[in-house]
Image (tube, rainbow, N blue to C red; front, side, top):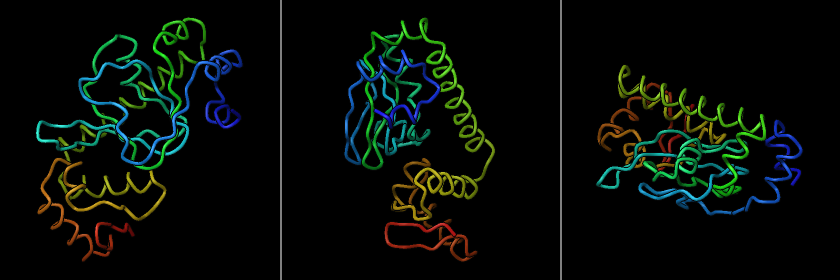
Length: 206
């Protein structure tokens, strides 16, 4: 319980008591799908430990990374879908062992009215995700693939606090909506420029 309070120090004592009383803690393995396209959301989630990636999936199963969720954050899309009883248009999946706190849908509207800290937390969550999506749009619209690739690697390293990106070239290509051949060629050029070191199914960012 103290860990939850430490992650969300902005919440009033009364709100924190309600979260602890009504929330359900779930420990999830890496690769666990938390939200699927077309799924109706019955609760929103607060991230306590680990990491969750939120992405779009095409008809062929390809993934396009939107953003990551880390401890102390919530999924803005799940809040919107839960509040408006709408189906999700995105996927959410853990990238490592993750602990989440599930909050029942029926509490959200009342909390928005009763607790200023929850109201501001939700607004801040929307704002942060919107800012991340603006960066993503700028990269797709205005940057070359080599710039997008470097930004992706730096973002992944920061989120996972490791210079080793344990993904295959195909996985990176999928998340950047590119081809494996293009990504492999660009990574080879980056290695020649001493920006990365290529390993089997991993890239080390220098």
